[in-house]
Length: 471
Image (cartoon, rainbow, N blue to C red; front, side, top):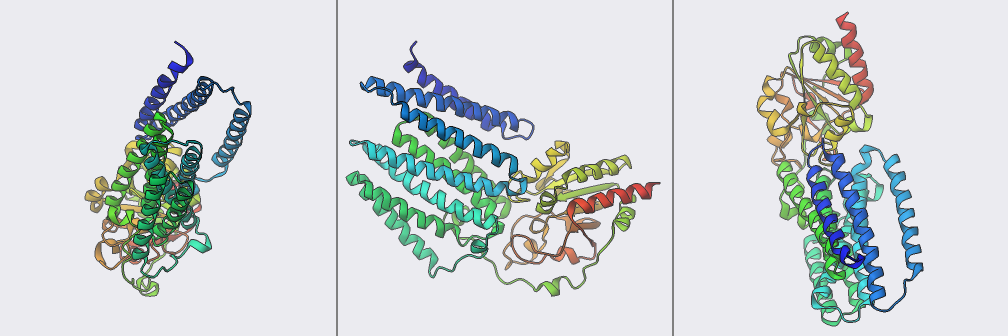
């Protein structure tokens, strides 16, 4: 069996590795194995692609251009160095921004590869032309939409507030029609200028689609853009007739849209609205001074006394825990409480932090048993039986306004019902709002006490107070 006949087999094995890797990434215990299988599949796919191009050149009577392989090698080395540095330096709290950036780069790569293939192929088929147009549209929307999402998550000055666009939905609709018209021109005439126009129009559309969406809804947008990047890659696979790119892109696209649907359900958002850049803005909320008029603060010593008689404690982690890197201190708190005969559980909201699984990963770093992580639907029915709920850095995902105020920006979003616990301890540095930008009446509820401190420092002080009280 020669190398040429091995190439389809290598692509098939790579595709199988992608499928099994994706399956294993569905559970925290096997996620690392899943990542390794995916990386191995990608290595195999790249090797097969290089051999494939080489064999095609030889079959056409051309020699092997070593310059191309030198450029590829340089790209691999530079990309590997950048990836390794980012993996070491980027904090977990900034991972959603990195996901957005990676989605965008995937979209940009699809646009460039499809455009390059079009420029070199003088007689493309109608299928290849349609796929090329799809790559231009989806890839450009993904790239520029992801950059806007990155800016919002990074809280860059230019992206903190949406730029007002008069008749925004009408403008988006007209841009979409113009983009489709340009793509029809591309398919009809195999025109490279038409490809460029299509990509430029889709770029503007990508910016305008993500522009009006607020920070609280960014996790949904990131999941959707992840799906777009996969669809763009799959379309590019059709454009260059590469089966493994078609399969891997379809896997990413399908898993991304499934995740988006799950998150829309978790946040009570409409998938249609997300697709077309429409988010429920809600109405005006009560003033901060009015909501926080009855806030009561506490100290670690007082909290230690409250926990002394607790039989069941639920810890609700949020973005503030991630920022403070308090997961190890929280794990110690869990052990301290369990040593006193207390049952400790963790209530995990689907979008706590800035992306799905954010809290799961942080707590896994601290060796928190996976069995103690309870999903929102599992923990909520028993929250009224909880003696003490400790909220660490969470805000919007525990805001009861979602249930009580239909005009709120988070109206209808399912939350963790910590307000139903007998006592609630909220550990935050201040009364600052969450991504939704609205005050949280939980902080001023009669059964709530505020422990103002940095997440890690506050938990460490609480651990010390509990130990001191035990002496």
